[in-house]
Length: 139
Image (cartoon, rainbow, N blue to C red):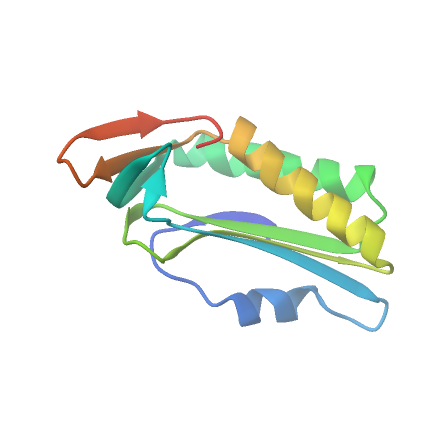
């Protein structure tokens, strides 16, 4: 099963979390990124994520594979939304299961930072003043 995926619809984090847990897990860490109502001092009305899906999937899988070998973790997963999102909607989720919390926290932080830096996903923010801007990477 893929560890990284794009989703054009909302997803359930409880189901994703449940997939990571087993008897060896002593620590679990997750990150949820939501659409906020502001960015760099500007009021945000909404946004759209677009991705080069084939490359995004491949690079996302590479990041999760790297995390599995770089950190002492048992499993990890990431889902990133595409399409139109409203303020308050869940845009990205990362979950990491490990025997110990330190590895879970470190891997979770590393994964989201790498996804934002390397995966070809672009954010088109619409501002309250009717202007808009494309943001990537790390937006």
